[in-house]
Length: 70
Image 1 (cartoon, one colour):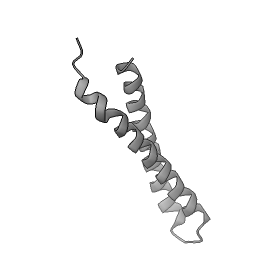
Image 2 (image 1 turned 120 degrees about the vertical axis):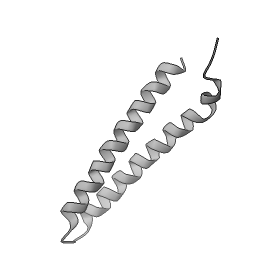
Image 3 (image 1 turned 90 degrees about the vertical axis):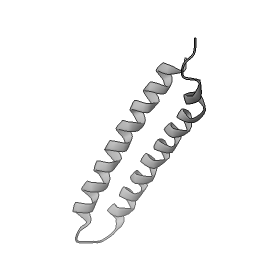
Image 4 (image 1 turned 30 degrees about the vertical axis):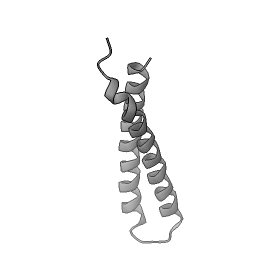
């Protein structure tokens, strides 16, 4: 029996959106490093913290995706 059929349609797209969000935050962080600004360090820490959080969520969802949909 398969109980997760509705998830099969949208779950991979959620993982893909999280992957692009992580790459986007990484790009924003790299652009921030190139800027010459006094508040760069404080902003860089916040941006990289968001990157780590998004990366963790993405990896968790990807692992669930691989384990669930064999």
